[in-house]
Image 1 (cartoon, helix red, strand yellow):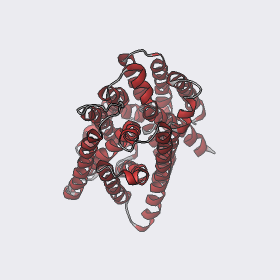
Image 2 (cartoon, rainbow, N blue to C red):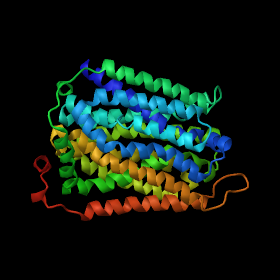
Image 3 (cartoon, rainbow, N blue to C red):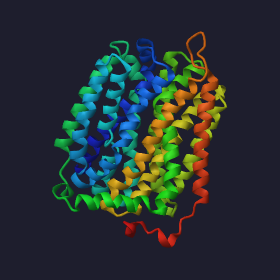
Image 4 (cartoon, rainbow, N blue to C red):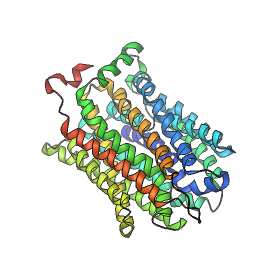
Length: 410
């Protein structure tokens, strides 16, 4: 019963976080048509979520370890609710960007707070599985942002959708604060603030962290930047699908995500019993994810759905290193460890999502108002290449095991 009181509120928060993150993939045509946005504008607008998200990660890690995940996330979700409401009434790019940034700031704790809470409440060997369940809740949010949102747009417009999302975010804040039980760590401040901040230096100077982090960052960067925006326009402009067909494909991609979050967590949990590490499972998953993007770069449209389902399923493997890293560090550092890597993930996702739009914008639109497939090919090829470089880094970089004891280095 206690586990349900911990898991369900945090899962609901992450469900909303992911819904807010990817909803622009469906409403993008409405934003472009109503406000006359270019591809670069659309990329900047949507990626503002990632920028604010990333900028707050290091302070977030300190807050999570100092005040606990329950209090931290519930306060931030009020900011997300305010941002969603501002987005709903915005009449220009500037206000949309501010609203989107507030959403990013407000949802910045939805995954990290859950991971921190599970370190506090769940046995260590079960953390990869419960993290997978948490990620599946996010996948359900991504799923809801597809066909259900498209159906909602038949009743209201994109502004009405964001009013609803604002109210749901406020509800999630209230549920988190009053339903999640207090933990003993919520009642005390075990370390001085300076000591907490100084511990980040130990995390960032650890060679084990730097062997895993680049590949994780590059994989998550690709997944977040493409799946939360450019998947929809690619399906329309490159594959030539209708708007309803795009929503249907996005729905199936989200289903693959849910299956991936659950499946990769279960696989990691089971294989751990045979001595196969979570990191090993993640490496193979991220390699298959990179291969799916090579197919998208080559624009093999005869296999559109298959490529995107592989993309959705194995794109989730980039989250597994989070669990692996928290198991390598002392428990009281969990919040700072996961946000130390997350800040790099979301700064990279911001750069990639905006950068993809800038690259696509280098080619002229067609007479039908669609972006040139050549732009997508150049942008997706660059992203795939970055991931492959991350795989090469992981294979070549071998930290000195004698100097990489993560539990004692910080």
